[in-house]
Image (cartoon, rainbow, N blue to C red; front, top):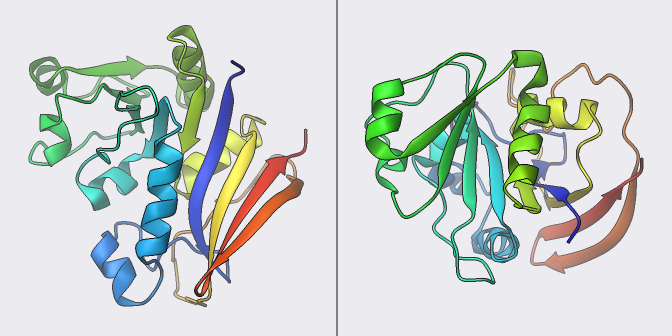
Length: 213
């Protein structure tokens, strides 16, 4: 099985992934950014994934990993990229049934990681994306979802590490100052995508793209 990274994101018409950096699902639903159809779409992707890469703010907003088993009866590994760690009261720390890895440019929360069974993978900040990929490949975790946000996405797209993008296009213009973007600037090069499929459910469009390399 080949190694692939699929970026799974919900995006507004003006390229935002929310109104603010840390935003719960309930808040997003309150202004019609997402709905139950989008949740089911994400669950479907998780059911065919071996691992998930996400940013610390996304994890802070949710509080915990999704608990969806994949098609081989296992929870995907959750890999959180962070520079300052996660609050110890987050339910994430108690999800012992899920394999969890915290990736950071310097050691973080050593005592908490040891007590809660969370591995802390450390590497140079400019190489975090490559370090994450190397770890997953070495553990034969080949079907990887990238949940972003914008800075995490920038690193992976800049280094040509994304193979597919599955985008939920939301019929919404946010227009907020400093709202989080799908991909932060600057990218080292432009990224071209080839549309593979599109599915309409209610007001949402689910788009699947192949990244041209």
